[in-house]
Image 1: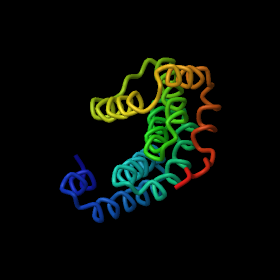
Image 2 (image 1 turned 30 degrees about the vertical axis):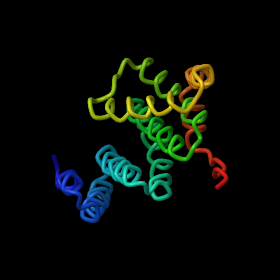
Image 3 (image 1 turned 90 degrees about the vertical axis):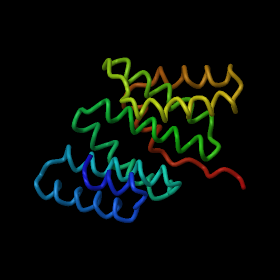
Image 4 (image 1 turned 90 degrees about the horizontal axis):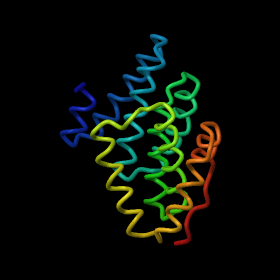
Length: 166
């Protein structure tokens, strides 16, 4: 576990934020896009988990394209899942279902499962969807997502969505 992960684990989100950003800058300066993207992705995850979705979303929009350009489909699937998690929190449950279907199809295509910590959050999110959506709607939206190509899934993930009525 690196310094930003330690800070995050200790609840020192301000330090973790600073360290993720510094790491991103260092690795971009070294022309190491993979490590830079890892730091940016982790920063976006932390922001999302803190409820700072509007701060996380632009990072996710940028890094998903960069992961795609590098051919890192497992990372793309993970970011699509994170877009789904944000959609669910924002009350866009059908969109979340479609995104999770798309991510599942990407992972199936490359035969790449989630890490244990990704799986834990994923299971919580799917359970929450099952509690809020009729089973038929969940299955139908999931199937639409599974039918998407990688490019379609990325485009759908990053497209602007209307804010739910408050």
